[in-house]
Amino acid sequence: MGRVLVFGSINTDLVTYVETLPVPGETMTGGRFETFPGGKGANQAVAAARAGAAVEMYGCVGDDAPGRDRLTSLEEAGVSARNVTVKKGIHSGIAQIIVDRHGENLIAVTPGANFLFGPDDVTFPEHSPDEKVVSLFQNEVPQASTEAIIRECKKRRMTVLWNMAPACQERPAGETLRAVEYLICNQPELRAIVGDGENEALANELLQWGVANVLVTLGKKGALLVTNHETYHQEAFPVSVVDTVGTGDCFCGVFACSLSFGIPVKEALRRASAAAALSAGVRGAQTSMPTAAEVDRFLSNPDSV
Image (tube, rainbow, N blue to C red; front, side, top):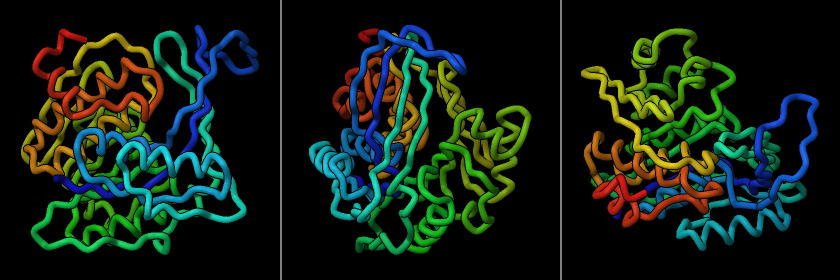
């Protein structure tokens, strides 16, 4: 079984579904409300677990009801929460989300305990030198903490994946970037990191900064894998979109899971793209993550969805 360690955020998503997204100053009524487990870190952990990996979550929740609920929901999804730290006297992370009839969304996050997560909250598990361990990161905890843990994971010979969501507020240290095997970002995040330009050119600049490989997700246009040797385009799988919340996290989690099993990178990218397509057809973030069997069935007959 593949092994994935996820370091990142744990939230509760408060979601309102409306016909159209509001504009600044506009009040909308008549929407439908639901509560889901969320947070980019937890979402990616659940995606990797549903895809078949043994997953351990590292992060922080508050000593409140949402925090207790998230520990339970992680365990129920097959993710080990034994390394999640409970912070006293602070609330757990909350995301307020509005989703329109096309599945597009607006998100505001109150990080709470997530912003107290640091290297001191991490006790690394033992693993043999020949064991394949993938570590997965995002940007909803302090950047300094993320960078420090990334460097430590590299020292421990883990494969490091860093999802630049949301984009970093400052350029990462060169030592951190050189520790990253796969940097994953969408087009706005890519431009926020590097600047304006064509996707492939910007990705190649990241390679010059020290990143080994860059994955650029393009929504309906698929994804680009840019390495020092080639640029590979993975087509998107067409589906009827219901809710795009969590689709990027699904992509990252399934990609990490696939690599942990030793699946070749292009096939891992294909599986991640298929899983993200399936995720877009279901409401919620963690509730939309497909199982390995569902991904297999979809890949054998993509027109079935």
